[in-house]
Image 1 (tube, rainbow, N blue to C red):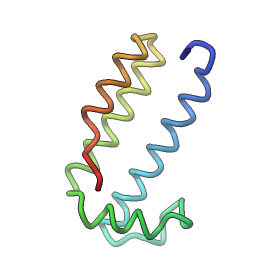
Image 2 (image 1 turned 60 degrees about the horizontal axis):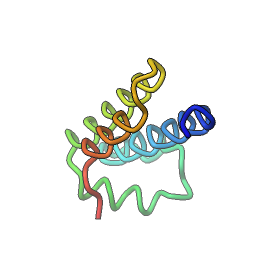
Image 3 (image 1 turned 30 degrees about the horizontal axis):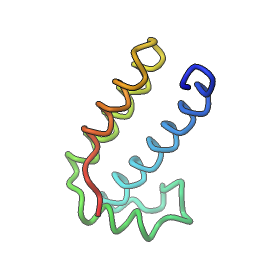
Image 4 (image 1 turned 90 degrees about the vertical axis):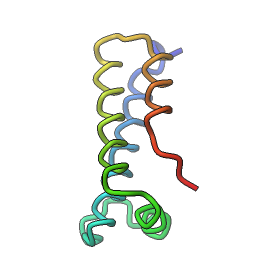
Length: 90
């Protein structure tokens, strides 16, 4: 399925990167740089429950998954690894 929807999946990962970037910026008091202002409330809640290192790790994991998909790594494995690396947000 990934081969048919490659661009869609990579675009989705780009959105995830932006969201976690917003969480990271918010946790550092830089709300004025947030891209997804319509989601500021949930981003702020997440920033209060997730540590700085977890936000950085999430961004790294998404970047790694994106690169792996670009390198034709098995999509299922790349996305499973991503899901295991992303912190649980409640």
